[in-house]
Length: 266
Image 1 (cartoon, one colour):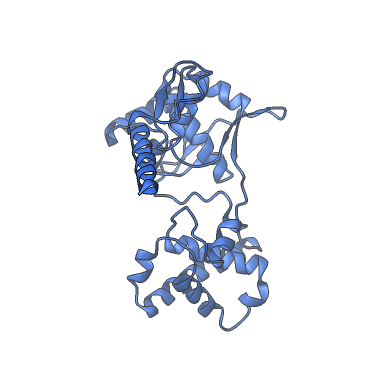
Image 2 (cartoon, one colour):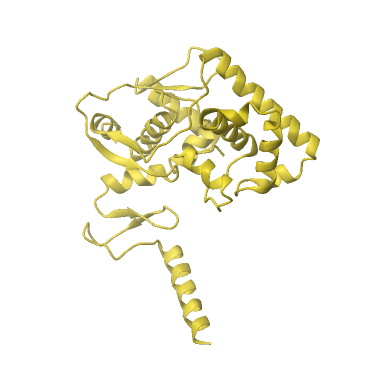
């Protein structure tokens, strides 16, 4: 599973303050974020001889992330992982003359021309897929989608076999809705650049999950997303503000509320 942190700077600051951050991210990713944070905002500490020890200390004591993989490692093994991540980031610096900046996104927009292009596609599945691709590309600040098919289809709320995924993408390719990398070993998807200078933002994405259902909730007049699981829920009409959850989540929320009520009564 990919790591999707919209505001990496805030995430690291909360991590270093020992706060329980919501998102769970991988060990190498957070080491990279820590290194870049110190390199950009605390250069004096990076130049210190004890900088690696500082990273080691941060990983063992601070924040909330996927500590299971970290705790399985012996100290010398974790130190090797830290050294590897530092080497990779320094290589980036040597090539580009600066460290890769930390993301500070409030949301990811979809623009009106992109929305209209997506709406021109022939099926809801194609629309969900294409919307997901545009959001993924904008998250990484590119017009390419390098995520695995498994990741894209999961985010798009589309279930297909590996064979059917390939056939699905192949259809979009034949119809020239997308293009592909020239490299035989790459499955990277190139998106059409349809955005215009005067385009308006029509959808704002605040988290990378259930993107396909999010798009359908905008184009289907009597549907909305479950506020708990993201599943698409049929509502009475567009003015129905009382329906918040799917049946399963609604039952769980009600059960939790009842348990809390009886607990407070005793």
